[in-house]
Image (cartoon, rainbow, N blue to C red; front, top):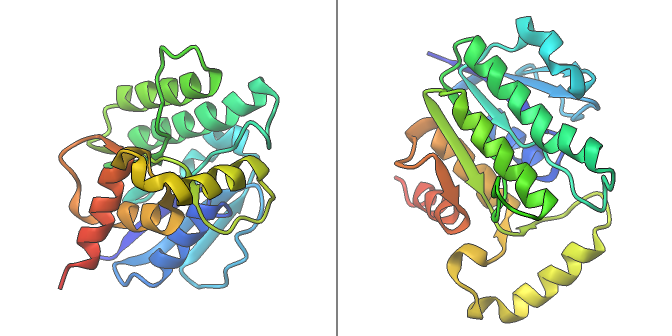
Length: 221
């Protein structure tokens, strides 16, 4: 049976790569996008909803699929206002998870971050931790929370801090434990595609585990 996927954040770095992968995947006949701006991909598979993402709950009738893939996220530099940041990194994924549960969708995959901790004194880590906690509370049958380290890839916007961190990671990466090493956006997208098909033994998946899942996919015959 052909499947339908919902992607949130298809205009971002990882989400745009994931969209391209699913467009090539014969298992999917329809890909529903919810976004504030167009992904600018021309395909009969795509059904695009350009909406106010802070009012996602108003679109529950269109929120129907076999899997929900949430790639929503921002940064401190891009969204310095903490209230707005929380509405994006906590509010949108939680609303999506609730709609997933409400509409009987059995698989929900979301990108969080390494260091996410609801008890953290760091606002950004705490926000991600609270998102993880409340996603799990929905008790969606197949829930996978990805916790990548610094994500590498070609972005539209200039992120000086990330460029500096990437430079040092490339030089000193061999000294770091596996879970702290930089990870490519393509690797995350690949892992999400594999998780949708094969699942995993854990709900919260570390950066090195994401790499292993993607690597195993590449080794399949």
